[in-house]
Image (cartoon, rainbow, N blue to C red):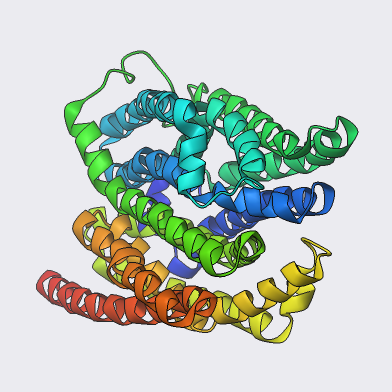
Length: 453
């Protein structure tokens, strides 16, 4: 499917056609990214064992924390590029590209240097036991050594998408999935590297994609490309990038804290296999969440550009279409969880107890999922138009304001079941909050549109 060659088409082309052009490549890319993680889990579960799945789940908080710093720069820069292109400020958009590279290198290195010396104590704090800490340690050492590569890859891929090349962004993501799927069995089974082999495959696949992205940005015929002068840090660009990226940053930090509470609660009331069950459910739910995130990524440059161009009717239209599609996707997750959970979880393991725990957890987790798509789109929408404060509030409303108290109180009353049920409760409350905020914003858009008319 052809994509408009110039970013200005974002302000003139039909919204439905634009959303398809931008969202379909992003959805394919994000689905591929979720399969990327799932492939690791499947090979680890089938090739290393049930406890290795639990060890992998222990790494989720640290992975979320690393992703938080990556999204702080990457998401903020991608949104800023969209808005600046909408304002025809091409020079600033160029400088955002250069600052993305420098910021990601600095933050990526700093995160690895700080965490590597204290890795085992961190993993024990996250819920590891003597039986699972070895798996988690082996996996995270490799991931942390390649952290800069990961940050640069995701940051540049986001900018590429916002610069009018969603298909190229999709190709980069699909490339990582294909390479990872090839290397995983080779390293895990062929070389006998176990869970560490899966981590090595992950870093190598991202490195190859990063090299390809760098080659694209060296093309001087592109509107945004690498050239001398753009890598000098500009205080306003850095602050604007970090302000916009603060919402996904806080969301990932909150997710880190939340997964720690989940792991600790499941470890206390269910043991290592309960954590493994959460790891499986997390991977399954992640597929649907990533599809919605891909849809959001397709919406982001359209909403950002038209908001910058003061075309509020187009902003309103793209938001509504995105909400409808996202709701359909998360409803599908609900149906899978209700009617075919055993089939889904069995691809990760043959351990009957782990399958039983995963089926129970999956059904509870997706109980309110038809509402989750709406909440996710609303949070991303405020971020897309640069309203960082509202996006931050929506991001933390589910993870912190509701879910954390539930995870502290309900497990004490209902044990392992209380950990699982905390998730749908928080989803429902957060969706109500998002609805109220979006309704208020719609009223403001209508006033702006009336004033323009």
